[in-house]
Image (cartoon, rainbow, N blue to C red):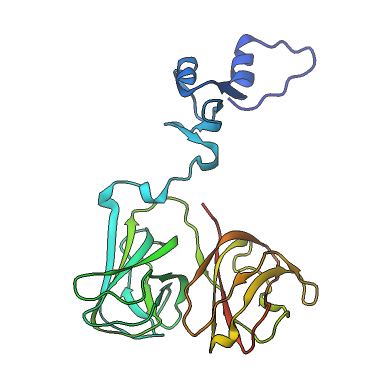
Length: 311
């Protein structure tokens, strides 16, 4: 029923009380069983509070769902196992160069990780960028890192996480770019869920900013990559040597008037460093984001990773 506003001295019927007051209030029940007994035929939009579980739930037309997650499906539980999909490329992968995995994705897909199988390669920890867009105009959507010191070879594949996921619509061109070159016969496979119909969120990386001195703010970007704002979800720091060791923090505000928005995070050092994922913080619309280092010498390059939604 729609909302109703009564006039003074207007007659209120029992139907009005039930439809407009009782059914549109937050009803309190001791348990799910008590609620089921009291509301055998709920209608979409009803909201209840369960004392036993301390949860606020809404009837979405099919089930009682937590209000915080109503209408937002768990992306890794959409559909059945038959929705799992793999998109692979086999061949050589050249470091710092984009390699096309597919020219046109077959269906809407949420990718949550990738694996790499190499015939004969061992090296230091590596990072793989996943990008979309035309050849020569790829945009980084996410970067994945594996959890061991060496690439797997022969019969074992190395797993790379995409913890915030990469959504790609049907028809999208996908490409990958490793930090180190991999030999001919290597196979990179992106793992995802096809036919994904959940929240379609975009993620990506800002342009890299070079920090050349300590305690000085350097602009990451004058405004967030999405007009409505974004969430900063991670960062990566690289430097030519260990002289860039220190910590970094992020702040908002005009040049010369920046206000720190976070604590200090380790910047690490060396030429190849993993992505550090953060407790996400809001990068509001029309807001300038900056970064600064507390100690160290030389130059440190900082790349910021963002997502437009956490759903």
